[in-house]
Length: 416
Image (cartoon, rainbow, N blue to C red; front, side, top):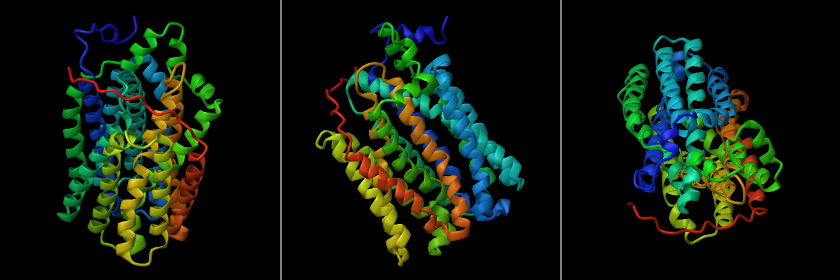
């Protein structure tokens, strides 16, 4: 008997409303964003506590990349085996244990312990993020409403809340150990009731389509098959560029502002908060924008704004201009990844392999690319280290002109 069988056979009278199911996914992504932003906002303090150089900090962050790669490469098989609810729950447990271990590594000034914490954090994030994205894409198709932009907006909202809390903690010189442990504990308590509201819509969709179950499980083989489709490959390339812009900011923006512009650590954290604010505003505006603007036009505009913001951050001479450009960077990066996932979900046949393929490329960019920038930053400064990111965003901008995804057919869905 497959896991969570009961949740796959819900009758219409017992199945929760789409709003309830999507709200649970949104809440979980708020917690993921909060946990991620928690350590990002304290990267200057992390570096000081570990007594690491910029290059060494890049190697510590590589633990995050290593764990994330393991997570995203095994998430599809895990989701196939456990379905979305249990895969997400396991990912959240591992993720928050990693945050706690990172806190202990910082408290004891142990680079190996911090590295191990980043590995676990990345592994859990890879599992939970892909499981939630696949589930939300299936729910979006089921209810014919744009949900993915709001889902990723919730991540940005969590990141914004984490940045606010991190700014306060940095301002008050609260030890990183207690800050990270506190967030891990609170997130663990809030996750349990949300997980119970996930009812495996993606698995139900696979059951409802005879003969497609093997394809919709989104295993590694079906992902590779998906990449053979030219449209999926182009959408994935677009997602890669915009996701890299997002990941570079999450990993390096506070340090970039400190080292590149001479801001104090608390000020660098506040400027990172401006980025998360731009991301949140952009993503929560996504549903309204999609009702007025075609998706491919919005994808072009997003890439253009991200490229302009990045270019200004790289070349700006005045700190105020650099700080303001961060908002444009955030607004541009906000919609790229969720729009790419929505585009991948549309079309005939099983959508889960396409969504998983694009999500995998996006998460590779978010989680693996940015730590490599530390090596460039050590020798050329973090401002110039953003040039490869700008190049990839420019490529995504060009790719957006080759895409003609169909508009999502919208309809209103009652809460009941």
